[in-house]
Length: 400
Image (cartoon, rainbow, N blue to C red; front, side, top):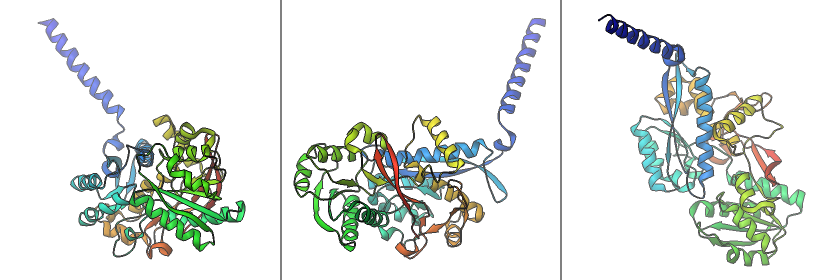
């Protein structure tokens, strides 16, 4: 009996000790925090996976950082941030299902989708369920009235394209230009915008109707007639990260010696693995930061991201912003947590310090010139040139 009582006493004490240790292991303030869910609906598999993956990883990195440091104070409450993700596989139908899932979970703020079709497809669901979403897609109709729930998360091709062409015309002597695009609405739309911008700058467009299927792996037949025209600049309109190195390699192996560019963000590692030295000189829109303008907070973000995932994608210099804008806007107007009308009301006058840039840069909403209303995140327009496995900054611009 004595031994049994001693054993029971030891078990009770052990259990109490375990609970005490567990309690000590969870900071009381953080344990009492509320939870704020932020969604992601976008592509994280297939040829365009790098676009959505950089979104998700950026959100997860920043959320973990904020939660680790005590959460986010919004009004009278403090929240831990939970990222809820859905891979739409670049399929509009799946994007709709993903946005419906977010609505069912009571999520009002969603990052994505990453392509035009998906962003357009989810609009009715978002508007019907009070969801503000941040696409990385370019159709102006998403951001112009009567639409009001979509906020462009990056620089659009019709903003970066003219800037790139103008720079190359003035600094590299570009006079002729050719376009090639996948036979899908997103890249075709970007091609059409690019052609319009090139003509407005006085460039001679020598090819604009050449297309390919997105699952193409041998681009020699597609590029042979274009290379024969010897354009000064070959634009890969809306090219997916997995296809870019294949197109670049095919063009160079056919003897093309001109410049190659795109208005979509790319992955340096994918370029290095798929095209090697053939990719040197390739020009693309980069992440919204460069070593020259990156703050200590941006450097810490990169370090945390790299530690969490074992690698870093330059595009995440842009993708870090969406979650930051959501949270800072909610801080400015806590009523917006459950009422997106309050969020939209706050956007016109919103301003907060930009933690990722040196100096006194601000987080603000822009887009008045392009869309007639503020439905775009103000992120720097960084244009990169690839060289020997890494991106180098070509120039930095802005939009209003």
